[in-house]
Image (cartoon, rainbow, N blue to C red; front, side, top):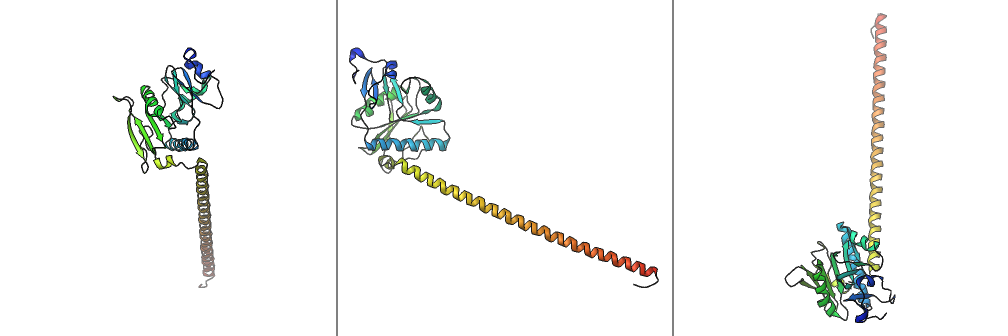
Length: 270
């Protein structure tokens, strides 16, 4: 099959889900035609990996039942399915996709919470066509990460009079998201993303330090508990010694009283 299916041989959505083309090429379905996606640049890949990592950390920290995925398709029309760079959806939707045969694509009505596109050469797709499609199916929030302009455009309110409303965030600013309240991520980080592997090493090092500090605190608490137990034991020994001394004094007093009684019986003054 050709990379672009001829008009007489367009694919249905169901056929697209089962299509087996070049394993090294990802395809979107656009009005029944297969459209190969460009191979991402290194920066494009780094930005996507960083976003996935940060979003996953945020969702775990906020204890939200959501998942962050790449290569997850989103159906936007009867004969169109896009593959955003990053998709955030709820766990039941993801489980539903995993249970179906064929390509992993959210169907109409299975709306993700957020989709993210990192622009490449064909920016018109992201700024115009995909924006209109995502707004039409009412995906709550859509980000366009534009490395060339060093800008992140966050689009919300797909039900607005003209579709999405948007806010632009540039270097020196943190992104404000209505879909992911409390998310802290700067445009500078996105445009110059650190290696996720370095972040993981840093997190592991921090966890190791926290574990070490926790273990040290536990050992210190155990040492103090043992010292307290020893002090209590010493106090108990001293109390017992005092009791024994008092008992000895009482015993000697009783003996003296008994001796005095016997002397009196013998007519002697003690």
